[in-house]
Length: 174
Length: 199
Image 1 (cartoon, rainbow over the protein chains, first blue to last red):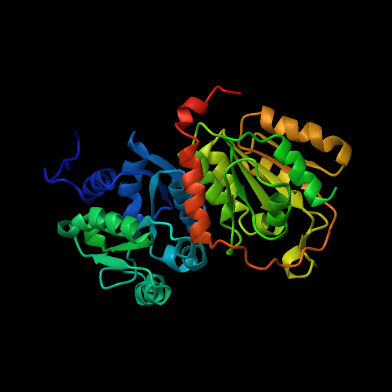
Image 2 (tube, rainbow over the protein chains, first blue to last red):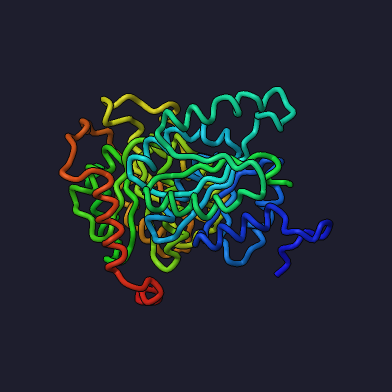
């Protein structure tokens, strides 16, 4: 298994995340790129055990994950936290209302570890919006907390709700 | 053509081990009227996500035919999903658009651009290998046959009469309950790999 980073010898965050997704039984991943997510999405797309679907808008990914669950496949959406804002209707009106579990692995842009004016609203708004929707979420600060991937997937499945993981830069790109 | 006639003609081409995702409002009313012959997942609000739900179902059940019955106002909200569907290459996925040019449940207001809108043109531009539309009741049967002969993803938009369809009162089952019933019905169909090659 080539899950080691060539530079450090330690497993890279994308390798850890993909391994955790597979251990959680996730066989389908929908994604829309973000700079912090690029290595993770590349690794998902290259993994023969994962059906990867690139989407054009993130709320498509919510729909795809929901449909996959209806057909017996566990699925995850990999996206920016702005996807949560775009997908309030799909998450709150469809997935929540139909009680459909899915894991959302989101880059938590716009916080102390970011560096663009236009990202900042995302860090400010995402968690209050999730709270308003009644959707559970966890913030993952770094690779040492990536055990939350499997735990979050299980929490999502048992609560029949989407669960959002907000990953800081260090948890995604080291 | 009236929407119930189209629903009947689609039904005539479905098998008991097919799967259907059915849009809300007038499309749902039509398909419920003819009685679904196979496990059918009925949409709710919000509009605009059901083409993606059907794609996820098609990818999770590759050995079964999945048909999306799409209201035109619903599909118009997520045209970019057609590019995703084409790129995903789900050969078991087909779309029938119930195109009456109006939001029937809210009083029949016309869709923006309704008079010029061609879903078949948009779907071909999005990468669908086969996408056609039909305005003539006499040709609809042949087009529906063609839809199911060809591998998907494929789309047929059928222009319908604009009939009123007031919003229906809530049915006996909530969406959560219907989801459970649908998933149980899919499970009861058995191993999907055995379904392959039976038709």
